[in-house]
Structure formats: structure tokens, C-alpha cells
Image (cartoon, rainbow, N blue to C red; front, side, top):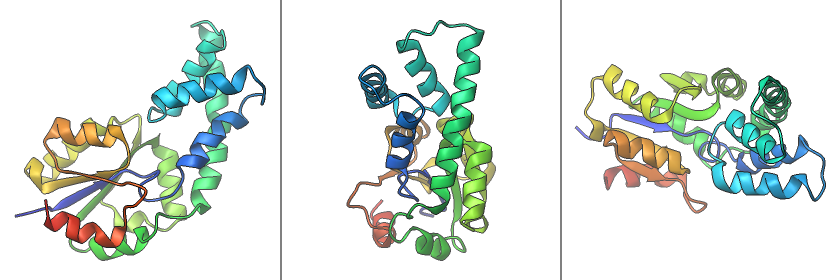
Length: 202
């Protein structure tokens, strides 16, 4: 029957927000030679992880101990990070052609979002952009992408090869692989107007 459902990543796939999210970590710490190199290294290693995992790792490498103080600091910084990112993600550019593609596809396909952005913030951003009516479901952190995909396949009553995952990250690729779904990588050169042709070739 071909593709029936498409599961999109959000940041870097539907909106051009990866640089916004990356830069936001540096705004949380002093701009000096001690903090910046540690932040860069951590982001080079685990940028696709949730902000809580990333902030915890940054703080550990800055010398924090694994205790209640660390947990409180992560929570505090995550709150500031969320304010920066949500404000920016509401108004940053979409990936070229993204909304038009969602508008055209939503009557014919079941569309979903699966992201590492916290669930409430993700839904707030999508509602602000007036995209929520395009999707049957929106799933953010702490939902794991491969588990979200498994649940979507089951709830839709489909075979794995009928559910396409579209994303720009390794976590998207891995979630597709673990569930036996086709995967479409969103590179810098990717154009949404070519999505239909890419689906036909799967």
C-alpha cells in the first residue's frame, strides 16, 4: 500500500533552529576560556540528546558533583534554556517549503512529530506557528523516539514499511532502523518539494 504515515523530526527538519539551540547553551554560562571549550566538546558529542542530559554533562565536566545541587542547577539552567529556545523557535525560519508540504500532505497521510524538545514546549511552538492541525500526534521529551515510532505503528495498525521517518539526525535514523521503517535524511540540500519523488522511490 506504500507510505501511509510520515513521522517528522522538528528542529533542523521542519524549522531551521539547530543553530539557535546550539548557541543557546553558550548564553547560559560565562563567555570565557574555561566554559566555552567544555560546552563545545559536549555539544560535539551529544547534541541530539535532551537539554537535561547535555546540561548535566556540561556541569559535571565543570566540576559539579552528582548530588541534589547538580539536579537543581540542571533544572534551573534548563528553564532559562527553554525560554531562549521557545522564543526563538516560534519565529525562526521554517525549512524552505515545510509548511506548504505539511498542508498538502495532511489530508492524504497521517503526519506526526517526534522530537527531543520537551513535550509541552514543542506543542507550544507548533501551536504558535499554527501547524498543530496538520498532525495526528506531537511527541516530545521524555518520549524516546524509537518508542514513539513503535507506538505510532501500532496505533495506526500499519506495517513498518508503511511509516516513513524524516529527520536530520542520527537519532531519527536509529529510531527508523530499530522499527524497520524507511528513513529520509534531511540534508542541507534537501528540498521539501522533492519529498513526493523521494517517497515514490522508496
